[in-house]
Length: 483
Image (spheres, rainbow, N blue to C red):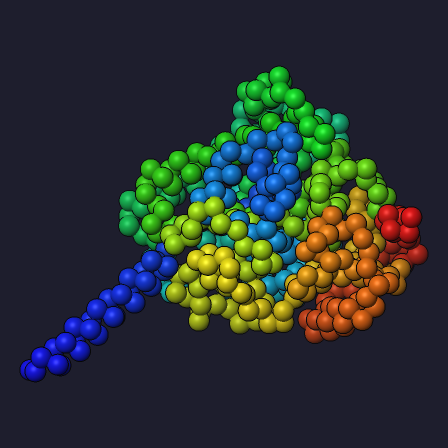
């Protein structure tokens, strides 16, 4: 064997080794996943901003030191979106990687048009590695048993009531009350920790989705947290002591989970993804608002909140940490909850096994390089809420986010609102009369997409005749812009 051949062979071995080391740095074979889904948690309800460019876009009362750790130890997505402004459709989107309009579930009430014979996250992971152990604890809100989608351990078909929601007792619901385990935060965390410890001891990769009932109503808190806040100054935006205590209890439970994450040295092989199912409550207590302008909503500087496709209803805390994710980084690329399935599949080397027909995309490259560009085809996000809701805008509407612009379409009023959302996160200035060509382009893209997926129309909605009175009732929302 001549020296030249040996030299080339050594160079080849070194090159392959270097490439493998680089790959290992950004990719773990059969990694573990912890997905934390918060309920009704607003984008600006943390004690740290989701966007470093807006340092004051945070709570002036709530304390979230442990959720903050996830942001500080990983990447935050400043333009992270829930697929829907209400809970159940977003939870479907997480499991199946599709937007609610395509799935056929755009509200948690009324007929469910979803084809439940689909493939979910747990099944994708088991397809690439049969040793994956999978669990879902907490609020499921999908009309099929979790075991159908490959979950080994779960709580069944749970919804709001299992978390202490009682809409018949409005005084108690919004005034709040103490509990030894508020919103089951401690029980859910304990069971999640037990599942993780068992999986690690058995040397099996795992996926667990911890879906908290907090901070959905009722307002429930521990006595200790409530008393802790007694002497603290309340905020201008956030001032409800019971709600602040509930936020603190939730955050404290997440801290317990992170402690175990560190104890078991999971940072080398375990990704944590945190999202909310929709934006936060617009005001407390809940109001029959009919779209009237709020003086200053709870999601400020975002506009409005849950039930509406304004930024307060769909922009959410969205963050991740884990192997290869650089600490305290930020991506401003728009991402959405139905990106979670393809992202997990990609991180687990199962991207080719992801289900057909999904329209979420993998955002794995953003985990490792926040400055990367994301290829999304088509290059926009669609939101669809064809319902009347008297505690929201009270008119069916749809929205499209494409590049720096966002268009909201109101088919009943035959009206559009256009915002340059990268500069106007509070959606204060309607540009529809200034840029009619952009309105026309975005309206066509929105309409074509909804037609292509046979999306539910306002007249198909279950309350079209009752609340909507067959399209005759009008929102009060446009007063904000007409004045």
